[in-house]
Length: 274
View 1 (cartoon, rainbow, N blue to C red):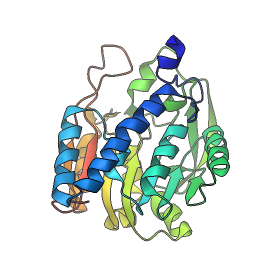
View 2 (cartoon, rainbow, N blue to C red):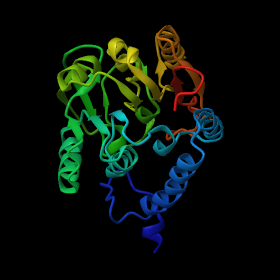
View 3 (cartoon, one colour):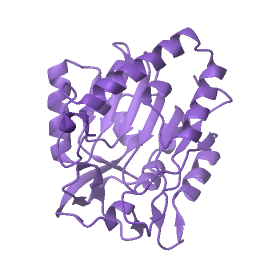
View 4 (cartoon, helix red, strand yellow):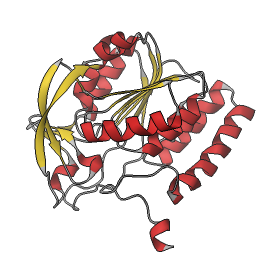
């Protein structure tokens, strides 16, 4: 029973069909979905998002995604993420999952095939600001993999476990990837790439023009500027017509020397973005 109640270990593959926390989240987010259906005026939804973000370190996808939406998820290793996106977009929605790790790609691609979700595409590339190849650092902890960047310090770097190995992987811009798939507009885009978020945004100038909502991590540190990358991320978002909210700081996965992670950024166009 104790093992069943534990949160998923990032050194083990999650299993959407058997994990207790996924079942619990299903119940919670079903209530959220019912609330949105019953009281889903745009301004009220935005107020709920703002309240949750300021009191938690993340926003549930069910508060961000509506039925029929086109969703882009940049970086994930979990079946749970795919499951929740699939349920949120419904049969008429579309999802693009961009995942750098070949192992994660294979695992998630097998899952979507088994579930019969042909409206979800998984792309095995690393989103970046250039098309090419780059060194990818691989950890025992699936959520800690990241593109190598000597100028970026991420709190994952300070874990005792470190990185197991490196490999060369393909990189491409989000603009290129979505253009090849024929995606012209995006309702919701999420970026969780362990310190490479700024470069991902630099590679989606076209995509940002046609995106309604963006949610991104932003607490990695730019060593040359001695500042979190959030500062530059916010500048890019503002220059592309986004309003934004910064979420509640979260606890670092590293030692106490890091302190709290700066809050995630939720960006949206207009006063209420549905």
